Length: 382
Ligand code: GLY
Ligand code: MN
Ligand code: MN
Image (cartoon, rainbow, N blue to C red):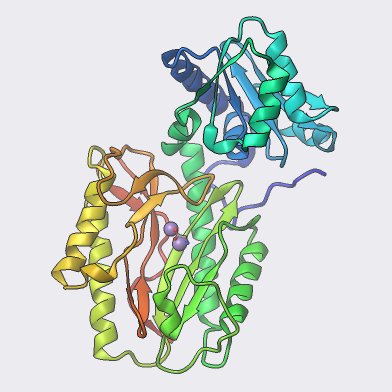
């Protein structure tokens, strides 16, 4: 089954054919990975995370493993993906397995006498899978943790990735704007969530980057509420958190709206969250830590005496996965660099009343940041 590539919502600064299938960024990624492996004194890495596989060689099928050593890279997949692998994979040779991916990848490692120490990710392999792999590779191979080598490379995006992520953000922005028109008393949370998911597909997304959140009234105080058949009423908050996957990359945006004319209390709370988001964004620059960004948001809410109601991190890295490095939370020592993409999403949640969150995706620039999501952030009364 050949997976087609989605088209973006608008004209892109450069065509996908000059970006994605080109081997140039992948060659660089493999070179950087090899340097990391040398640091760890590993002869090769066994990559089992599908996100890491696609990052390194372009393959987007649902069953694969990639072995990268000093001089070569070999992708293992099965016969469902013969044609797709031929089209997508760059910089690695392809082995179509017949007797099981792990058995054949393991046998390959056993046959390669020069590979004695192999890095792998404990977090990306089930115990049973690792057992099968070890058995096939034999006792001559020593398995060592890869220290999240590929995930670290992924944190800083190249210009091609940023262009795609800007498109993914623009796409979800336009979904949010379109959906506002449908939000009115009487419609259910599930109806709105279905409309969001439908709109993103219509605009070219491969799908949602996480389960769409629509939470109304008191339920908006659940930061990660699942939409229900509860119908929206007049004079209540509605929190919408959604993201789309476009050409493999995720977007993630939250807006909170009010149905009717907002009372003073809601306006005050909303403004405090907006200020916290502004403060956090103001702390973003190369050299600052992700913890500084979190602290800026937290301090702003503490000043407004709302500290206890902000009970999650200020954000997270965003890319091939909706949650990836760097962690943008309390005490995070990750140093921001140009090209990192993070979310900034302070929120407050008052049990029995409701919740307010404002979330944007931003890219770290040479001297600050740039918003990728730009849907209006002022309190919208619908
Ligand atoms: N919806 C997941 C997040 O905002 O992180
Ligand atoms: Mn979100
Ligand atoms: Mn998020």
